[in-house]
Length: 103
Image (cartoon, rainbow, N blue to C red; front, side):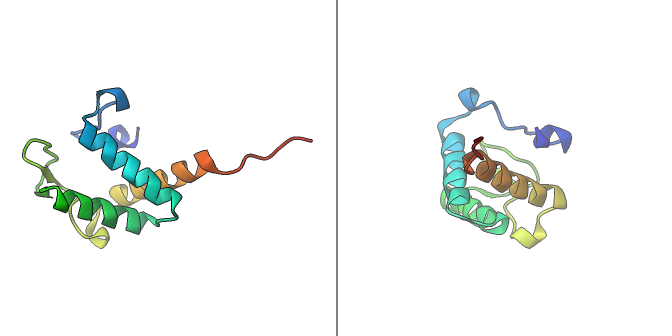
């Protein structure tokens, strides 16, 4: 998991253990990626969704306080976070890409 490799102190839980709001956020991201959103657009829509839900910027991710260090404009994200957006988009698209058929 990229979060572990990057030393993220607040690694997202397994799907079955994730709260509903977190699963909804992931589903929304998948749908946007399927609609062709760029990594920047994925971040911007996530950012808007979080702000609308009452989240604010904070130095650490805290679901109770609703703070997150990535609630910044895309251009201000650390490279590792931008890479996460690119990988998310690529994985979603790869999973649904037409598979070659053998003849």
